[in-house]
Length: 292
Image (cartoon, rainbow, N blue to C red; front, side, top):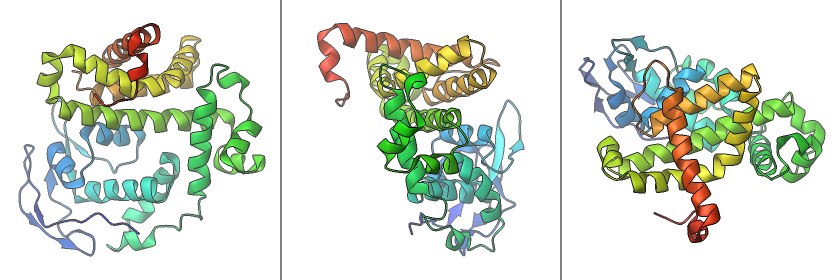
């Protein structure tokens, strides 16, 4: 089982909080010490946009609110992020399953990593295959409505009845596809922003920014269009999910957010979509997916 190394670190940040904290049994000894989001990112290696995404989903322990939408984090949040990564990447569990498991794991005796379930206990591999198969089928021109659960099961290599052990309905599977795709895209955006020189770099070269974001979002476009169509028809769960997706993408793209993050998220998608359409009708379509 993989374990991310935790070097001894001084937990301090812009939000205050300083002191020496060393690792004891896989966790920091001083869990009362608080630090900034920037320090949390440095300690965990998880992008800020992903931290925000997990916090909105209720995956992370509650963080102490500061001013102007900022929060104070502690060593428990570092442990939580490491566990989420282990359960998601190493065990193949969904964010919904992780949400159920994480509180109990965090209440362990400092050796919570040893209490992780075996990969087969929750059928993580099967669930991951179902999400990947559903994504491919939902992205086909015929769309979500024409895809059957039997087709998804066959593509994933599982029995049809097994699908319902992981997802109560095709709708729940679609939600899992959206959340997984949103997470992957957000992580790609965050990395691209860093490589382009941060928000200042984005503003300095909007053409390259649009090109990079378009390449990242092209794969997600059929699913995002399906979600947008549902939301436009007045489906409340889709509207809530769409708003969360827009906020996550806007944050990952380094867009300044107001009380309503939807316009910022729409701007990201519209810019990327326009570039994708240009590829579709021009000679650059063959470059899709190649490195920038």
